[in-house]
View 1: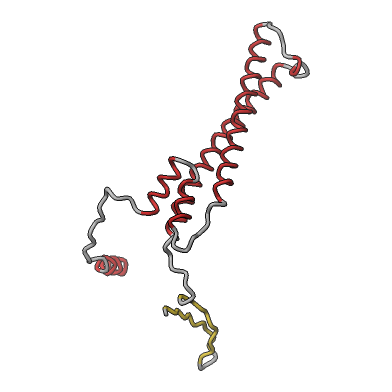
View 2: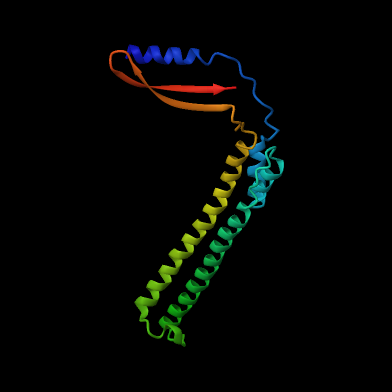
Length: 178
């Protein structure tokens, strides 16, 4: 217990410097990219490409984003239409109305099961749309973090095996900041 208390005390001493808070009204670069992607899907990726000093071309991601959103929207609309058809068919069967010949081979429990299946698929389509939308926002923010990241060849890390006196084998970790 004393060791944990000692570790906690030394850990707190390491953070004794005063850090000034940034102005909260100004958005950081990555936050603006995320905001642009939230308003118009793919706009954050385009912003990162345009404003990158290394001309990081992320334009190729925009068609993938719209393909994902379009596919999810297509399945959402299709599943919504099918569940409405099946709900109408089941209601017609219960009220003794005219039946749709496309569903004549199904009995009432089968039509109800199909209705529930399309409801589940519709809900999954909504989740798929939301996932694509949120992932593209997060990706724009992550990409924006690396826009000004230094990837020059002067930065390197290497791990070399070493043999020490007495038969000990180890590894040496070399960092190079030229």
